[in-house]
Length: 174
Image (cartoon, rainbow, N blue to C red; front, side, top):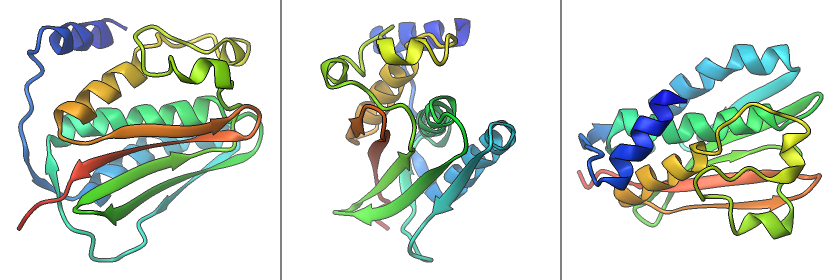
């Protein structure tokens, strides 16, 4: 929580340093998925990484900051998938960018709450009964990192059927 609050403070003060370089987004995704596989397995949830193409272009951005955003999506998918389930993590090229997505069959987000989903400290009422842990900062932080990195962020969700969160990052121009 303290680390998240410090990161929010840096974001709001415009002091979030980005150290942009070329990197493999597949490697980033593999690291993020590996971190959450033990937690997912203990909850009877399978995480599958789908990269589609063998020769995806390199991404351009700050590996460590973008990994925070990717981990947030995976963490939320694991937390809000109740019972046995599957989470699909995918990376595909799209219009000179790389599209990263995490799709789950979890509790989903009620329509009335969707407009608030990237706000600081917001947590949907329907998830509070399933998961009491969480600060409501993760998606706010992810959105800030993605936008500062030159990408876009969004989601689709239906209550009771799951969610798909996605973001884009620039592909390397080389």
